[in-house]
Image 1 (tube, rainbow over the protein chains, first blue to last red):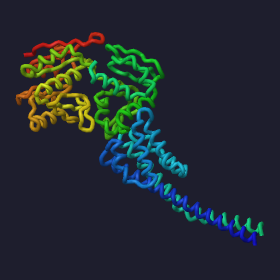
Image 2 (cartoon, each protein chain N blue to C red; image 1 turned 180 degrees about the vertical axis):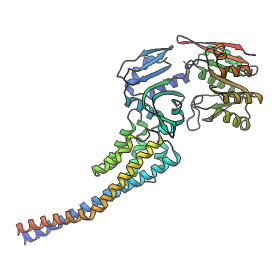
Image 3 (cartoon, one colour; image 1 turned 90 degrees about the vertical axis):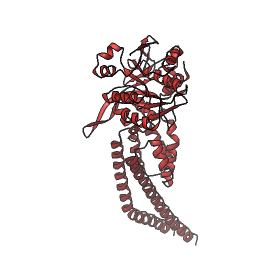
Image 4 (cartoon, one colour; image 1 turned 60 degrees about the vertical axis):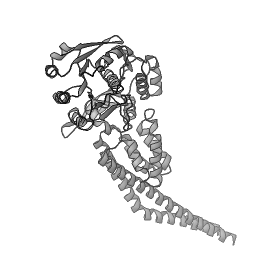
Length: 170
Length: 291
């Protein structure tokens, strides 16, 4: 009886772990999409109004969600450190302060605009945002396609390992 | 030292990293801070460069200064960059680098190699009487000349302040935002109680806008550099409004050698010429009647 309960517990925990992995993956996807929306808005504002960075960030504040909103707030707050630190460093720090637990590939993509924004002429900045948005959309699409496959694989692996453990226990 | 000058020095230092700013503490009479890639920072005092101890200038330092000066928005400084400088709270930062061309026209600078942070000249109380004589009993069309970096703009700013504090309505054409250092609509430099400042508008257009809209008694403008500026001065003076203006020249003889300024002098618009000369750290002001 004890062995049966142990077997059930192992299987349930495998199932829960698979569900947690799925939730985490969906959250990463959601964050990527939030940042994508934020960068699209930034591109639009920069192209239309060519405003200064503090004004752009104020305009974006409130229009963004979750991690992207936290990123904008962090970056806006840190602008008074310009001079002592470069904008690229401030961008990097704000990004890692708001989305550090995210996928490294996603963070690497989101880190890129910091090296160009506010530093070059408008066209170059817009081109960089375009490149970043393309990479981000590609990343989202790739993850979206992989998600069911990854989920099936994770679930299958966890359940079969649980089953194997169960057989050993029984 | 006037409070404006003190403020300007503090503003200039605020652009720099703490270590470099503290190395500059003993050069508070400096007229310029010079930063050249791969070289030691330098200050200009009395027209001569003095090397400042510390690390050599690298690209990252130049970038950080420009990021600070533009609020990480170099694109907003594009018009100034095309002319080789940007303005930061009344301080002009001259820039050298590589030109970027868009559709065959120079659109910006990048790969910055040198910065010249120019601190507005300290106005000495000695020329207070000279300024008074240009305003009382009635303001006279006045042209202020000097070589670059000697203090034309500071003198003009003081002239505006005194006139606008003496119940004269002064409209200021501040094409490059150097006279007022306007920040979100508020002048960072005191230009007197009765002054109205139009920022960023080219002189010909600004002259007409102010004449039509502000009913000025005096119109002040910095640096006459092209034929259209002379036409603007002529139109303003023709309307019975007094003009205060500046031009780059060492002397009246120097002006006569140049076609543009010869034409300006031949029009006999200006009644008074103020020449500023540099003698070491001191400035010499002389006045002569042109009519």
